[in-house]
Length: 453
Ligand code: NDP
Image (cartoon, rainbow, N blue to C red; front, top):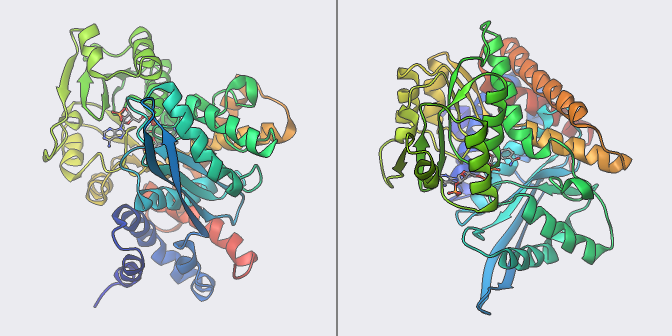
C-alpha cells in the first residue's frame, strides 16, 4: 500500500509535472510532517498541507531588452508569491540560465519555512529570470534589470512583497532594479533588500548568509563541546555566500582550503588567508573572472575543471572536518556524501539552498554527523534582510555591531528551535525534522487563525 507521503506526492506531481526540484523540496518537508499531522488533526481538517504547497500567486512575464550590438533579446521573468501568513512575501531573485518555474517554486517553498524560523514577520516568495549576467556588460545588465522591474514593480511593495538577491543578483543588480522601481512609482521605500549602504541598505547584509552559515556550524559544534578553531573547512562556490563564510571561518580560527565555480574548483592546502580571500573578492565581484585564476596567482594551489556527467564531484573528496556548500542545489550527491563522511567530515552546514540530494541527506543523518539543512543554516541572509526592512520602516540605521549581534542571536535561536523541536518529536539531533516542523507549525498556526484564504 502506498504510504501517506507517496499518496500526497502523487497529487503534487500530477498537478505540477516536470517541476522535479519542487517535488524534491515538498517531499522532504512532508516526510517530516506526518507525526505533526497525527498530533494536530486540526491541520488536516483545514487542509493546511494542501494549501501550503499551492503558491498564493505566480506571476510570469516577458523581459525584452536590447544588447550592446543593438539586437533584441527576450528573457522570461517570474515571481512566485508563495505564502503571506506571517508577513509580506520575502525571498530573493535569481538570474541564471537554469532558472525555470520548478526551481523558483522549490526556492519559494523552502523560503516559507526558513522565514518562519528567523523569528521575523516575513512570508515566503522567490523570483528570477533565465537571464545570464555572465559575460554581459554593465549597461546590458542595467537594461535587463530596468526591463525586468518595468513589469515586476506593479506586483511588489514594502508591505506586499520584498525581493532581495540570490545567484546572479548582487549589489549591482539590486541598484539598477531599485532605481527603476523608484522612477516608476515615485516612492523611495524598502521594496528591495541588499541595497547600497548610502541608500537604505543595512550593514552586515552582504555578509549575513555566509556569517550565519558559520554561526550555525559553530552552534552545532558546541553541542559536542567543540568549535571551529583549528578545523579544516571545504567551501564550494566563490560568490557572495562562499566569500563571507570563508571570512567568518578565518575570524573564528578555522582554515578554508577550497573554492569552486561552475567551471571547476581550487584546493589550497596551505589555507586561504585574508590576503587570498581579498584576491577572490576582487576576482569575482569586480573583475568577474573565473576561479581558475586563483591557481594561476597562487601556484601551490591546484585547479581541477568540472567534468560534466561525472559520478561524483572530487571537491567533496578533499579531506575536511567541516563542509560548507555555498554554490547551488543538488551539488552533493550520495557518492559525494559518502566520500565526505568516509574522509572524516562530521559537520555540514548548508549555505546554498538544497545543495544535498535526498540520498545524500540520508547518508548524513544515518551517519549521525552534525547536518544543518539550508533552510536553517542559511537563514541569516533573509534574517538580516528582515532587519533591513525594520531599519527602513524606522528610517534609522543600526551599527555593524548591533546588526551582527542580532544575527548571532537569531542563528542561536534557529539552532535552538531545531534542536528542541527535533527532540519533542522523538528524533534527537535531526535538524531536518527540527527545521521543517518548527517552520511549518508557526506558519500553519497563522493560516488557521486567518481562515480559509
Ligand atoms: P552568487 O551568484 O554570488 O555565487 C554563486 C556561486 O555558485 C558562484 O561561484 C557560481 O559559479 C556557483 N554556481 C552557481 N550555479 C552553479 C552550478 N549550476 N554549478 C556549479 N556552481 C554554480 O550567489 P550566492 O552566493 O548569493 O548564492 C549561493 C547559494 O546560496 C545559492 O544556492 C543561493 O540560493 C543560496 N543563498 C543565498 C543567499 C544570499 O543572501 N545571497 C541567501 C540564502 C541562500 P559561477 O560564477 O560559475 O556561476
